[in-house]
Length: 213
View 1 (cartoon, one colour):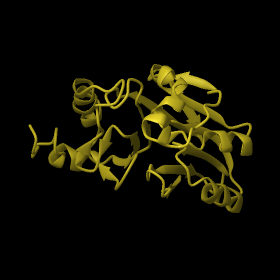
View 2 (cartoon, one colour):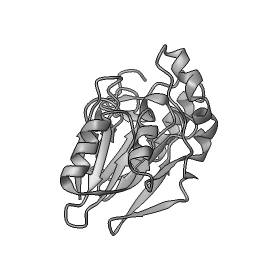
View 3 (cartoon, helix red, strand yellow):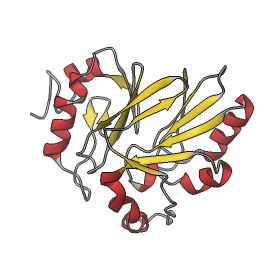
């Protein structure tokens, strides 16, 4: 399985396309823009986009959904059930950030951490990690963990937006993510990627060398 990262100029929320060149299957984690670049990549590789997995329902991670669903009507869009209300208020989110309004499309399935996703002969495990939002999800496939805005390189996601909770993100990171193997690669929602092992030591909030606590 290969991973291609796309970063739009607007809000710089990372999109990750997971794909198998032989099986021609593809999956997108977050839909944050870079639509044309991703469309071109999928077409060039001859891929079949099966899923779009949303890590959380903030508008900057969902702003490309309508165009993707129009381009790939058979793709299945999955999102946390706990973020359903947040998703229904996409226009309010955009207004709060003085951003053009993003249209909410129908989500194919609202999920939680009881759901396992079969993709390209592999299983994607869903990990519920509330804190940045009530329904923040991480997706683990092989040794690759896609964390949205829960965990960043030596940092954590903000907790001061509606549905955010520092206590919950602390529990999610310490008692869920930091229980995973050190070698697991962490693909973040913004900025540089990292690893579980690196964050256990160097995370500014919850690492062994924490600077803030």
